[in-house]
Image: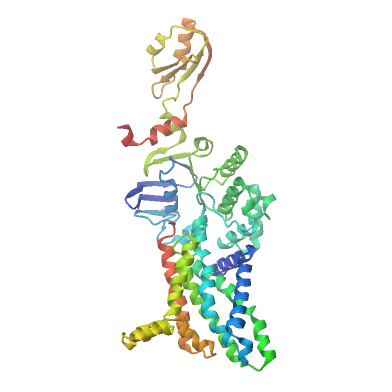
Amino acid sequence: MICVNNLTKVFGDSTVVDDLSFEVNAGEVVGFLGPNGAGKSTTMKMLMGFLSITSGSVQINGKDILDAPLSIRKDIGYLPEGAPAYTEMTVYQFLTFIAQARGIPSKQRKQAILDVAEKVALKNVLNKTIDTLSKGFKRRVGIAQAMIHDPKILILDEPTDGLDPNQKHQVRKLIKDLAEDKIVIISTHILEEVSALCNRVMIIAEGEMRFDGTPQELLLKSKHHNAVSMQMRGLADISGLLELEGVADLHYDRQNSQITLFADAGTSIVEPVSAFIYENQLPVESFYQVKGSFDDVFREVTQSREGTI
Amino acid sequence: MNAIWIVSKREFASFFVTPVGYIFIAIFLSMSGVFTFMFGNLYERGEADLLPFFNFHPWLYLFLVPAIAMRTWSEERKSGTIELLMTLPLSTFRIVVGKFLAAWLVLAVCLLLTAPLWITVNYLGDPDNGVIFASYIGSWLMSGAFLAVSMCMSALTKNQVVAFILAIVLCFFFVLTGSPIVLNLLSDWAPNWVVDTVASLSFLGQFQDIAKGVINANDVVFFVATIVIWLFANQVIIDHKKAS
């Protein structure tokens, strides 16, 4: 279990992480979201004890990171931002070094390396120098070194950055297939990742927690949640739509003759709208319900508070 | 496996997968050859010893040791691998010692490769091999002191050139404090104990006895203490500014 209390980091006169508190329990896959410079990496570095903490505390499995950094690090697999590696080594040498440093007994070392290489599809490049690998491979080497000792806690800073769609899919599948009693924290700014992977979302901006809940809860906050979008064949009288029960707002895109109807929170407007279309014989070409978009909510949630005033 | 050994094995290997290690050894050997024969007049002296060879070691180390030490931390900072290394379950102390031993071992290899010189004087005459052996040990100890100082400078910055220059300046200070120029300058006005303290800080002063084959406990303690103190400073620096 990870327990973060009032975590704060100040660099010079700017507060990068501001009074952050949260708990993560076994079985949770947390998507750590935020715009660039929001303090995601800084928070992760403090979780690992790499950055000093200005105030507050980090406890992992009941131990404080400042008191017992070594025994805590044993239980964690960590992919630093940018997936740094000793690029003059071959993948195999590098993973051997990590396995040794992680205290994997020499008899199991080779098997551990082969297993993890299999999982992240590195088998064909094991004897290549890391320097010569493409960005996607380098990232996977980083993920491999984080997982080699089968840690209980996995902290990955932008694990899919620089991967092509196939590789992204593979990495996501890998994280999904992990045992259920693990803790996974992934930072990302790719929103699709969250719905594909996580059962919990935390959004931070300007060092503050702006949202903490499930991806579904996040969608509920979207203006587009349960909205109805329809394509018109020509002009028609649509004024009545706005008076329907549950319809909060109407947006008409003249160029594409597309109408979007926003619903009141928590209500479905498919039925009344379709009944209205039928009654008034509106020339509707296509009609679909929008689930909501993470992009919208993300923008809303992370927008600078000062900026909106 | 012991953490010191793991780190030091990786570091040592990294000297030799890149040309750094080979170039360093080649330059060390050719420079020591030039110093010994051209400036030290090993043959012309007509004496069967390696004094001219060892006498130049402080000056050789002054430039070469900072060169081999400058990458120790600077490169880790620059490439970001420091974050990887410092989040492994290894203590800072062990990482520092591991890195130190790896580079010190490279210096030992350099010294071992000068063995032909030793063989030569044995072929040409009848030197006191005990003296030569003691000088080798002393020279290696002194190189460790240079190395500990230079590594500590490397911990301060992510720029290798800055690390190199800082290390040279500091090493130069430790060499120079024992030279007659500085001591004469001081002795004109400073009390004796100041002159003695400054002189005793000098690598040069401590090494001069060793080069003659006299290893006394004082000199050994001096170099070992220098190494320990600078490695400790190195650990403190890394612990306090890992991330920047």
